[in-house]
Amino acid sequence: MDFKAPQGFEDYLVTILWYFNMDDRSVYEFSTPARERLLDYYDRFYKSIEALGLRGYYVQAYGESQLGHDFALEQLRTGCGFMDRELLKESDRELICEIADKFPDFSVYENENEELEVE
Image (cartoon, rainbow, N blue to C red; front, side):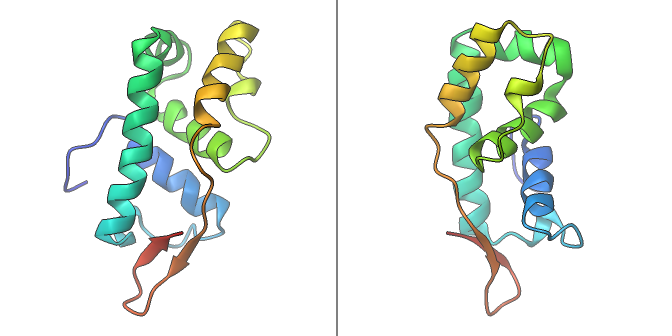
């Protein structure tokens, strides 16, 4: 990506595209404001679980890529994601979900310039 982002962020964007049936689109097609908004969500989530010592634990078990994927699934209220990760203690899965659920869900659409926007 052409900007600094935590590991797993691109996987977060790919999962968002998949969820909205836009798999034929690229993560590079998000407008700058949309990308910044999503990066803010991801960065705050990442730092929140890192502060609790849960990021390293999760990444050791599943990897950075899966972290981005599961955050998108949880944030978009799909009913799957972190709770499916049986290598984590149930209390840790619940805590990660509680943190992720504090972030709003959203929609993705194409603007007049054919860029992807978030609302």
